Amino acid sequence: MNVKKSFNSFVGSSVMDMAIRVKEVGEFQFFCRFFTG
Image (tube, rainbow, N blue to C red; front, side, top):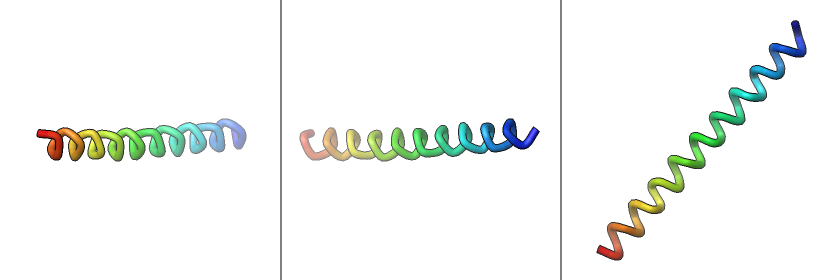
């Protein structure tokens, strides 16, 4: 039970990091598109 809980929290944090990374990359691409016109 404890292993499953830690595994779920690990997967959740990984998904969170991935979402934050995707958001940062999306904003970066938006700025590049904005500056290149």
